[in-house]
Amino acid sequence: MATTHPPLTTSTGREGPARTGRTKRPRRERQGPAYVFLSPWIIGVVALTLVPMAVSLYLSFTDYDLFDAPHWVGLRNYTDMFLHDPRYWRSVGTTLLYVVVAVPLKLALALAVAVLLKNIRTGQGFYRSAFYAPSLLGASMSIALVWRALYNDGGTVPDVLGHLGIHTGGWVADPDLAWLVVALLTVWQFGAPMVIFLAGLQQIPSDLYEAAALDGAGRWRQFRSVTLPMLSPVLFFNLVLETIQSFQVFTPAFVVSSGKGGPADSTMFYTLYLYDRGFSASHMGYASAMAWILLLAIGAVTLVLFKTSKAWVFYAGEEG
Image (cartoon, rainbow, N blue to C red; front, side, top):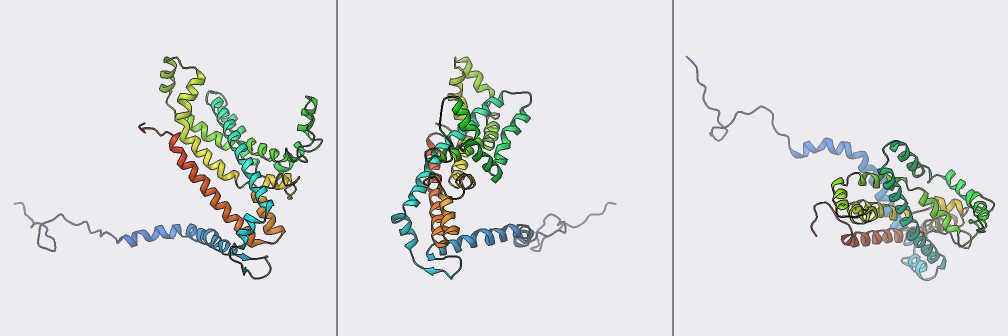
């Protein structure tokens, strides 16, 4: 005869499913290993980012020369910066001019090359690597030195232009052209946004181009009506990144001007002037105030870009 077993009951006396013997651990206990693995990152953020930022904010209200103890001066660094320092405003103007010129040129060149590479089937990996290489090398001191030599008096670029009947002389010593040397070096490093553009182009459905072609749209009309709207999120992403990076340009300006921002402060970019005030003049409190103004300015520009993006950035599945 088959034996029957009594039904399993819970502690309340009700019948219920059999327990597997594995109890569910408390949530805090389950999160413990996660915090252990995150601890190096948390320690790094606190020790290398948050604490230095707090110290920098405090120093921006002090007179500190790196040798003596900081002396509290309140808002004096900020008032001197805005009201009594014409070199500060020249550095702001130079940086804004550089951002307005370099960022659009860099993105336009990156997009143009990405469109060309999209239609190349043979050797695309080689061309992609070749065009990306300047982004890896351009930020180095050695490349900046070579770039300075190319545009200096007697360099390759002035000589070639001279043979073409355009006599500019050395760009590095010309106050009207020296900042452009730095801008062109930045434009030359278009590889990173190009790779991002290429990835975005490959995600655009070919059906859209076929439909546009059936409607009689040429290549230029397809680019304006299909490629740019579908690529607008990628374009916005690159625009934000490149704008933030351009406000922080330092190494090319330092090398081209030999660390002095010359000639006539034409390459005195914001970060270079910050370095000059903080380390050359030993006014670290003033430099800290400049750093916080730069942070707020970048945040404001980024906010404006996000606000205006609603008018020209289109996402898949978005109505209107």
